[in-house]
Image 1 (cartoon, one colour):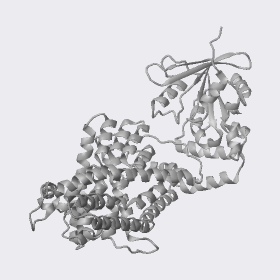
Image 2 (tube, helix red, strand yellow; image 1 turned 60 degrees about the vertical axis):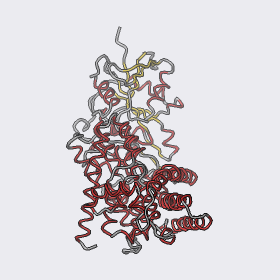
Image 3 (spheres, one colour; image 1 turned 180 degrees about the horizontal axis):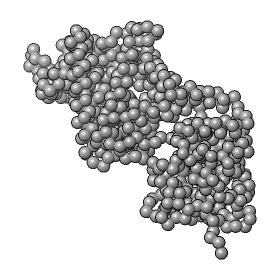
Image 4 (tube, one colour; image 1 turned 90 degrees about the horizontal axis):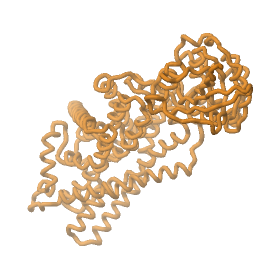
Amino acid sequence: MSRQRKIALVGNPNAGKSALFNALTGARQKIANYPGVTVERKSGRFTLPTGEPIEMTDLPGAYGLDATSPDEEVTSKVVRGQFAGEAEPDVLVVVLDASNLEQHLVFAQELLALGKPTVVALNMIDLAERDGLVLDPGVLAEELGVPVIPTVAVRRRGLAELGEAIASAGQREAGPGLTDIGQTERRVAAHAMANAAILSESRQRRLHASLDKVLLNPWAGPLVLFAILFVIFQAVFAWATPFADGLEAGVGFLHDSVTALMPAGLVRDLITEGIIAGVGSVVVFLPQIVILFAFILAMEASGYMARAAFLMDRLMAHVGLSGRSFIPLLSSFACAIPGIMATRSISDPKDRLTTILIAPMMTCSARLPVYAVIIAAFIPNRSVGLGVGLQGLVLFALYVAGVLGAMLVALILRRSVTKGAASGFIMELPKYQLPRLSDLAIGLWQRAWIFLRRAGTIIFTVTVVLWLMLSFPRANPGESQVDASIAGKVANGLAVVVEPIGFNRDMALALIPAMAAREVAVSSLATTYAVDASDEEEEAAELGDQLQSRWTLPMALAFLAWFVFAPQCMSTIAVTRRETNGWKWPAFMLAYLFGLAYLAAGATYWVAVAAGL
């Protein structure tokens, strides 16, 4: 009696393998784990049209036989007959997503190069046709040299034809030209085969393909991405100014109203100097936060963000990372906490650790108020030509400095403490679509609420505590209240350390509460100057005016440079400890970021002074 033949379903993730497996085997399935690993093994019985019973295995989705994850390692070993205790499959059924044919044909060529009996299931053909793509399976079969059967697994279409093709599949030689070629050649061949199999496609699909030719081009794509980011940071200042001015006027009106209605005393000082001056100085930057996130959410919803990750893969490979790190790092522009948590999708442990360690160097939204208040106070609001504003240009340069610094650190880490080669990166590109206004509105409301909630909780609490530390003990007549206070004495001690890089006592004081939340640096400065004001007119002066009268331009530039590299809030450190299971790497992160911030601020200050700014 001959041995029961074994069939393996194999293909990229999201090709519809599981749906096809369920349609073919029904309830006759067994689920266990492969020996020695946690990867799930799904097998079932299927009877061919000839009456022959076979065992069918649904292999984990993979992008290639050079494994980069436990799932891919199992698939690679099974199809090659290298997995202990697992019989080599007699026939491979390669499942392709008809609507994403070019991408899936890359792995298909690698499987065909093995020379095993193979049948191709061109799955989800109905979805491709719905999207305006009509394919010719016969042309594809001729190109691949194996039977190609159109299927719709969820509707059981093509299953009988697939069974007949499996029954008649015989031994074959490796496909011509498929054995000794690399991934680049396979991609070129996949593109040619996919185009040859197209009978017709809709105008929309042709438009999307034309967009990808530009946006994913290795030369034009980065320029487009750079231009989009440049426009974003110009808009953060140009579009937000009227709204920010309105909020600032509202804060000033509230301050004046409280001053007029309440008698002089500690309670009024707490409300005007602590709460209104501190929290209000941060709230006025809500328009900048909303505009920044409006662009980010629109890029995600339109399908462009995934393409930006694909573009960045080539750049990041030069520093030992892959495009998998781009999404967590991009998330860190909003907040490093979800960015660090998003690194769980990175399979390579050293790749993941490196991404965690550089995530705080991405300029989170909490730094934006710090940048905005300093830039508005010291950088002239004028055009440098072609409608480009100098303030937006400086803001863009700060974000670029953070990214370049992170890439340099990643390069050093990948050649030292997290030494290793860059892992591969393949991802499914979503379809282009216009963002829905309702979805954008919900996303912006959520981001705005998070910002306001931080202002009403963390920033409010830290500001009140700081005001108390600035207000007691009370100063003697003629003595500065800040000098006499507890906070002032602490700041004077820290000022000795940061004085060489151009920081004064007030700047040193702002660094301490900023570890709770970066925005608190702004409220700290506002509260300090409100407490130290000699009269009500000086107390009510805008923070930008206070900074201009107390700081020099080199000091302001050094303060900006510090915040480009300084560690983020303590919540980020706590999440890093949780994700790395210890204090070793958070301590390392704090040490190198503080060192970078000190050197960057010092270099900026010394160069600015030498240049006579």
